[in-house]
Amino acid sequence: EPEVTQTPSHQVTQMGQEVILRCVPISNHLYFYWYRQILGQKVEFLVSFYNNEISEKSEIFDDQFSVERPDGSNFTLKIRSTKLEDSAMYFCASSDRTTSLRDEQYFGPGTRLTVT
Amino acid sequence: AQKITQTQPGMFVQEKEAVTLDCTYDTSDPSYGLFWYKQPSSGEMIFLIYQGSYDQQNATEGRYSLNFQKARKSANLVISASQLGDSAMYFCAMREENNNNDMRFGAGTRLTVKP
Image (cartoon, rainbow over all chains, first blue to last red; front, side, top):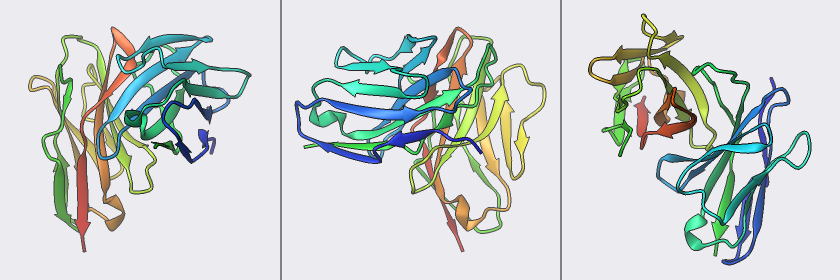
């Protein structure tokens, strides 16, 4: 069964450094998402991406964040200058939704980002 | 404003019994979808069940069913015949037609199944 993959599984970085989290969505999916989950808290929407552009973003997704689909398979989340409060699990998801609300988003296993 | 509310931070259930996890939501959009996800200790998010706002019948998927009460804006998850492997965090989520790229999650309920 196809699945969303994410690398690395765990990233440790120093405050102020740039990090890139990588995701490979399911190959025939067109919609891509990033979510964040601070330890012990709920999953929070960051951004959605379709047709090579951001279609929606939350208030969390400020200028420090960017997303890119550099090729036909990868979908990346970049944090330019990490802060301690960026420490969280970051989930990538993808779906093949067209117009239906019944959009089962397939989640990757997550990347745990630790900022020290 | 909080769109999805899960009032039970933790729940316990005896193996083989049924359990209901509560979820209430807030929206003025007549068209929306409600989702439940399971997050085991390994961390991945697993889709369980979906209910559309216009669906006439409550959704069911195996041992999972959704008790959808539209007027009360509640979408409780019922797990029947609980198994030890059901122990996990459970998140309720909603997407609205007029904001349909943005899935909002509740705070989650940690379910522990006791042998």
